[in-house]
Amino acid sequence: MGHKPLYRQIADRIREQITCGELKPGDALPTESALQTEFGVSRVTVRQALRQLVEQQILESIQGSGTYVKEERVNYDYFSVNQF
Image (cartoon, rainbow, N blue to C red; front, top):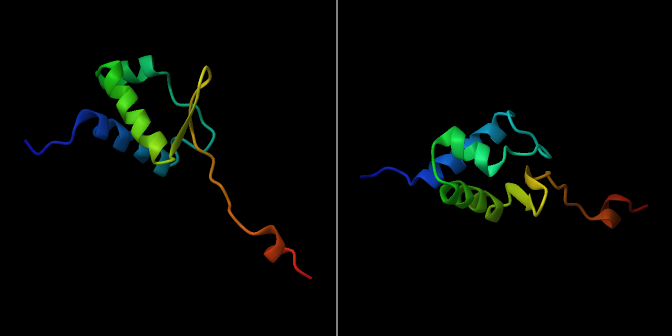
């Protein structure tokens, strides 16, 4: 007891790959099938991990294309930056 669920361990590992620069914004993640093989888990577990990271806005899933590391967005007010 006391262990994290597998999907959380996988999500943590992917998050770590992003933090250390192994995966960069805009990079495509391996396919669900490849992640399933890499981690030795079911596709359902992989999907849970990816869904968690999408909900946290770390990844973005594009139907028919794949799952990508979300681009960092710079939010600023255009008018406050360009006032005369």
